[in-house]
Image 1: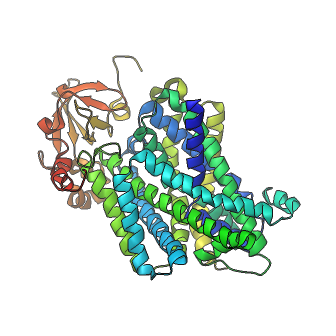
Image 2 (image 1 turned 90 degrees about the vertical axis):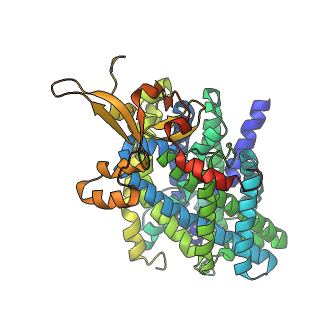
Image 3 (image 1 turned 180 degrees about the vertical axis):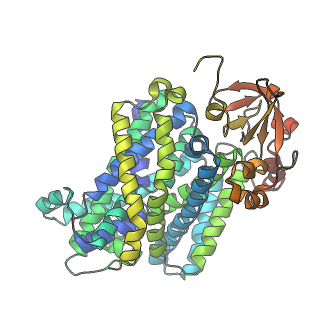
Amino acid sequence: MKKIFQVALGIIAAIGGFVDIGELVFNTQAGAVYRYQLLWAVPVGVIGIVVFAEMTGRVATVSGRPVFDVVRMRMGLNVGLVTLVASLLINLVTLAAEVGGAAIVLQLLFDVNVSTLILVAVVGLVLIVYFVPFGGIERIFGYLGCALLVYVAAAVHLRPDWHQVAQGLVPSWHSSALYAYFVVGVIGAALIPYEVYFYSSGAIEDRWTLRDLSLNRANSVLGFTLGGILSVALIVVAGEVFFAPKVQPGYLGTTALGAQHAYGEAGLLLALLGMLFAVGGAAVECAFSGAYTLAQFAGWEWGKYRRPREAPRFTLAWLIFFALAFVIVETGVDPVLLTEYAVILSVVALPLTYLPVLLVARDRTFMGERANGLLANTFGWLYFAILLVVSLAAIPLMLVTDGGAG
Amino acid sequence: MGGDRMDLVYRVLDDQLVDVDGRRCGRVDDLEFEGDLGEPPRVSAILSGSGVWHRRMPRRLRAIGARLFGSGVVGRDVIRVPWTQVEDISSVIQLKSKARELGLAQGDDRDATFVAKLPRS
């Protein structure tokens, strides 16, 4: 019973933790511009993150190696260094986007100037991360992020044409660069890599053993799949509310208006609360991912389960990440723009971390009988091919469409 | 691969070093061999520290690598851990002594004095 309870809690936290500023921006825009026609890209991205996260969780549990340990070991020093630098930069841009997003949501709630709220957001996050233990952090943000389920209710409440929604889930193609750009964006938002770095290091933080492999499967498969329903709901709500009046949601607050349209003030408040904890949680995961990445590559002691003085460089690393993100956001750069860069650049770099994980997950020397079976190998290589295509297309599409501006 | 053979690049190079207390204390950044010509070389030590990174980089990047990550001064940016210190090779390289005794994890020790001043550290 206790086990079922633990699994359920993990899944709830995964649902709340799935959506971040990437989905809030890209999925809302996708729904506003193409109504339901991009829905199919959500399951493509979600199955990708399930495959990737399940492998990293299993590799971390069985061989004790989190993602950047594996990158360093399988890709060697040089490719490893390139991957490290790219990942750190992308992590930082993503962190800045999430922090900026949190500040915007706070501003919608409290109407204080945004510069002060950025400081409030960063200091608040740093204090929570510093004083709350690892499991507590996962739960605070995961559970409260579930307020975003208001979008699922709203998607049903707005009575969309379910026939058209179902049609949207069938892959379709338009010979338009803008459409392709949003396909890459929606897939990329689901596959944003810090989640995976965080997830695999979290398996070691939570001291998973072989007995937790079923927990790993439940968290990754069910948690992320149910999280994907939230992603679908964001598109459906945007398709219902913003498509017909041709609203271009270039501002994060617009996303919250979708829930208000369905449920008035209560809907708006739930949406803002959910967004605040979703982007707040994502910010924490980003800062940690940056520190994990650096520490694992260099071999430093790491982990929130250590006291700060036992893992000093790791502690300083995540503090510095927050400080840098603070400086970036205070320059006044638009968090929505940062999000687009973060998602697109992540997609470009993704194969570099995905490949070594796949290679180790199928290697019996390290994984024994827990190595990839036929199913995991098939999905593993299939997604590697998909990632390569998406990765190569991402930057040209961003340039051609001027970042989705048309 | 048989029990008495091991692919060092596959199983040892770039792996995590862990000291006798379970503390992570660097990576196997390079390996040192000894032996006369005509004799089989033997691994004599693990080299750990970013100071050896430039030697593993493409030739054109070595100079800038040395400036960025250190030029390989033993005791400063590279620590030499005798192979006799290796206790076990599993998912990590387990060492027989404490990191401090081997000169490893100096960066963590240095920053620990600062971090220890933070509350509840």
